[in-house]
Amino acid sequence: MGKIVALGEVVADIYRGENTSAVEMPFTARPGGAPANVAVAAARLGSGAAFIGSVGEDLFGDFILRALEAEGVDTSAVRRCEPPTRTSLAFVEITAGGDRSFTFYRSDPAADELLSAEDVLRETLSGASFVNFGSIPLIEDPARSAIHRAADLAEELDVPLAFDVNFREHLWESAEDARKAVDPLLDRSRIIKLSNDEISPLLGTEDVEEAAGMLLDRGAVLVLISLGPEGAFYATREFSGDVPVFEVECVDATGAGDAFLAASLVHLSEGDWDEARVREAARRGTAAGAIACTGYGAMGTLPTKDELERFISDRG
Image (cartoon, rainbow, N blue to C red; front, side, top):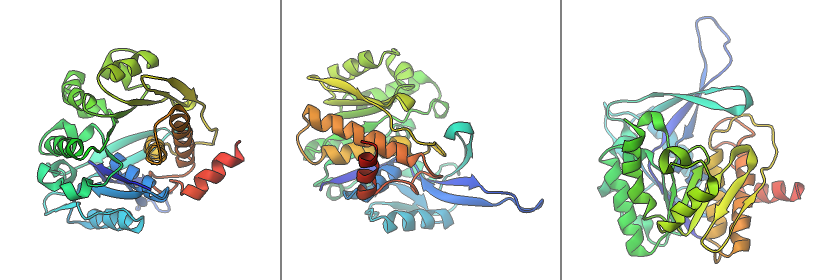
């Protein structure tokens, strides 16, 4: 089994509990952040996993590191930032059907924003099957430079870049600023994963097949597009197809896309990317994403390899 190296943001997701008193409001903290979720998901599926990021020297930074290490994720490349810089908090509100909204509490700058190129070490990336990142660190330096440093090292080491765009428009000054920052990494990534609501603001089309073709023409080897309740679409220059969704009762969709990507990458790391393997990778991704929706938090319901196998087997 290979190793998935993920870098970028990590936060403490804060969920509101049931009120037991008029003068108290209980909360539960759960670790989150897309790249950290991918690392944990890969580790649970039996892959080696490492996370490169930055957290504060605070209660929530300690909590996140303990959680990652408990899952077998290598955290040796995680940076700790002294006060007043703090680990970011994301307060999560769950709506009907498992949809979420987030309210962020961050220091200025936040710990995850201070990830730098110096934090990205060759030895961490060496031997990896994939290096995974998203667009949030591309908003500004020094985190943007850290992503480009990782891309440079990955290319030197012949490690495929897996770009999970994870576009959050409200975090950017404008969609145009986002496109300018994202485009160079689209051109450098072998695997690009998007959701169907990201292709219009970033690529100027709402057609999934057209979007995939645009990315393949720019050098991607494989494009994965998650389609929510419609499953997922995959495309290479030689073939394309779609896989259906696995029906579950969705409690909280937080981390479902990260589970999808991790399960896909783990399966792709086990052999050549022929059509049978790519289709099965996408199918396993949709299964892992469905499982991730069945409980609260991004990491708590991520499946192990045995759990994923049973889930798929039970549903034919």
